[in-house]
Length: 304
Image 1 (spheres, one colour):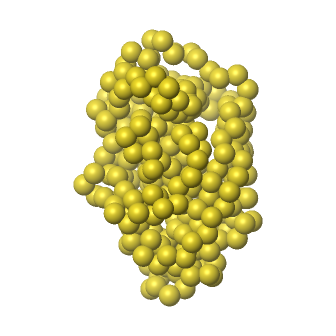
Image 2 (cartoon, rainbow, N blue to C red):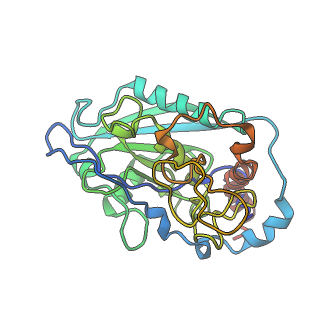
């Protein structure tokens, strides 16, 4: 298990998911026909080397009670219509409810503290991650630098069109904060949120996945059968699952593929009410807590 300390390591990297986004009121609609994932460009080499020594120091450490994460929501729209990305407050509220349900009882509570709305067709259409670096392109950087608020413990969410992107969403990792704090947060395609038009992908689970990355989690299939997500109790998985196939087992190591894990690829398509406690994967939750507090360690002690 690699320990990532966002307040002390509670919030790192659930994963970046790409999808063909829906259209808007003035731009030609695009057909949603699949997705790729940009987080595959993130490697273990990109993590601070100090995480290796933190493993022994912080293994088993869990924060007592719930950690309140304040959420600043930035609505970036093409125009003033819902179809153009100007989602109503009810969508934001429903999205926060999904986060609290999926992270409920696991050390985190999310609370919306601010909503900022901006009409900017360029940001709406061209925000994306750079295909070479896996980081924000120039439009995304400008958007974030103009609108981001709060400190390292604040979750900034930008809902927008991602019209020219293959992404349904993407997130920064906690260990990026020290160098680029102005870019920290999650970008999400607005039609993947509750009530959106991407049928089957509009439950808010993609946002859960991205917040997982923001907290420090990799995909479960990171580095395939040799490495995985670097959480001890996550079974190894060779590749992303499609359709949550029960009994899938792609690696020789013990355990079937963790198809119910939010970081596996498609878990947001299915309800999670029937998942047993043993399938909630304690190591992931521990790592999220460690990743969340990691930011505060960096800022307070400059350890990296």
